[in-house]
Length: 115
Image (cartoon, rainbow, N blue to C red; front, top):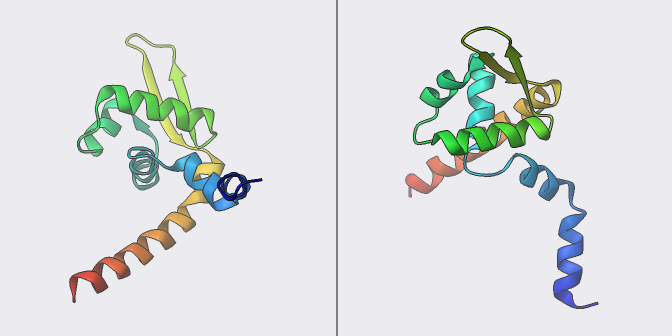
């Protein structure tokens, strides 16, 4: 087995790599954080709360997060249709880790900018 193949298979088995691929991407974390901060939100509320996200990227990211079991999508059979998004229990369980990562990022950012 080549070193590159060994490296790839080791990364594939790494739970941290798995987790980061699961929630990573430019828009997934901001969506998760917005739902954590605001609770249940409708599509347009989410769109307004995440600066720079396009409709296509929001829709795609919401679908991926729903498939991954991070968010709930609840559709109400009304006219006009209403859809609400919220974090699942798995999504809620991410929050302490994200808070710790944000704290670490803040410390590193401050130490870099103070040099």
